[in-house]
Length: 206
Image (tube, rainbow, N blue to C red; front, top):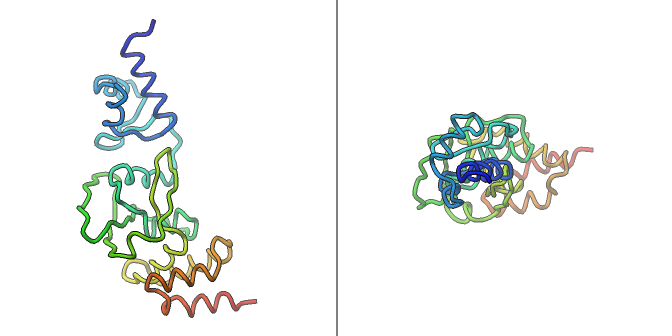
């Protein structure tokens, strides 16, 4: 008959196999003690990748894993701008920080890891155009392709115009968004006049 500690370790490893990331309070709710967690870290079975955040030692590295870490630490965070554009496969640029938006009056989350770049969006820019993606077993809120491209054009101080145009071109060439949907999002989110000439130029080719 397995000991209580062994049973806790089995549950710990099984959970991390399914979810890849786990917060300490999630594990405590499952009846897994801090001692079991510490011993698993010491044994090299799991990794402590941040304060109260754990990952299986043999977990495959996901380029987007940092997005799920932010989602776990800041439930109101919505992945935006460069991070969203990279996730959607619209740019080759991989941001060194996780870009996310919160509401204009939301509390600033404390996230010691991973490196972050937080922006505040007022309404309707914050609450609309959100999708949910599952990354490493974690639900991550993220702006859609049309919304992300509109935000890129709307915020030239945050996203270089050349990057915004590159993402617009990629979305069209890869058929990840229809011209009408892109233009509707641009109009809805304050980037219609900025994006229209580029969209017209790209769609008139050929």
